[in-house]
Image 1: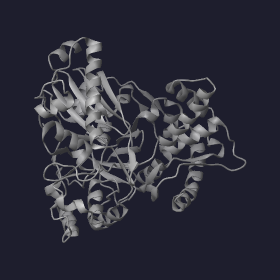
Image 2: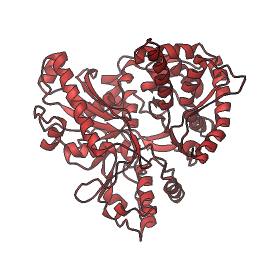
Image 3: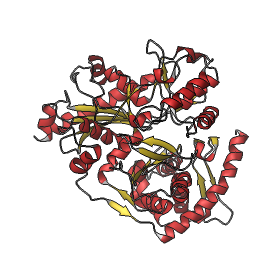
Image 4: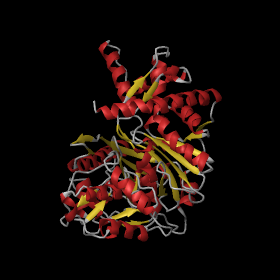
Length: 529
């Protein structure tokens, strides 16, 4: 069948991902290639000291992106989108959504971007002898206990954003193993670590949180398994018109890190990927456990349960985007308006020709706190000495370099201290829409080849669609890696760059200045200005 027939016969596959700046729905056919998409733009807001998205906007955004997908399917292929072979939901990992016995959200959604759980993260890490970052759901829950928040006595269920949307669509309180690994540590059998869970219960004993941890967490489901079916209520949420029908099977809901691994075919040991957008993180699949606990490195899993070293940084493109908007505003004032794509291309071209060390300019891109460098909140800043070469190209190059600077601190621990072997890094995300010089600078920062695959640009919505297709595969003996290599990544083309000597030396000079500039960043944060 061609894609039109597949859509008409309900044989296409749908993936929806709730990212930091947009919700995207993607439809794929049996060739596994994106055939249509729909989007909804949104952004988190700082309300009462909490980075959040309103509950109503979560539902609105999913509905809007799906409606946009339906419209584009009809425009492109002339047939309505009324059913699918399978579906999947993905979203930003970590964070905190807590519900009572009536499924009422007890406090506003607390996203991964919050840096309000340092006390809990430190205590859990020490007690469990396992790194529990501030972003993790367990850290948010335990911090609420430590702060004696009123809502903790009413908690019946705690989940992530992907788990919540999946529940809205299926009525199932489940989670993919990869997303679960950002809630609480996973054992070698792919379940929550029971011994560590008992330690958590010991810590909360005698508090207002009277539940056992494992009783309030979603059930773990591994890639390839059926995780529920679209209910009548779920179908109505997606499409209030009633055109799209219930009964579609859904794969396990996953985190954006896991869909990024899927979309870059980076799920086997010694492979890895870097995802760069509002946040930036690397995922390196491990051959063996690390020798020590590192606060800079999370241990999570692939969608099929393999251990992964994750270096996550809260801050990436927000400051860069703000500067581009500012410069675009100057052009507009001068009646020289350009499209956003043209503006980025022009500025990146200047950055590519700029001084490799950014002319002595240092950008610190911290809009929010950054656990990896010990900062509870952020103050984006540009620093330069009187003799710095202050040009537009050097400014933009410094902003791009700042996107990778904190990531490098964590990655150096993996490669230099833990001697982790990385044979291949794939990059994806908004930062690489214009690949030069961002891809080249990343290669210099990591000291390894970096590949951009054209399909990886479709992002996590495509990744979760692939996981949904994997669940619906005919050959149930086929592994996820076999599925990806046999049916998806048959085209080996892609743009690969190796570290350039001049880029590497320039980035090293930038890093020295960046690390020194963190003292000024801390002073600015402490001044609370």
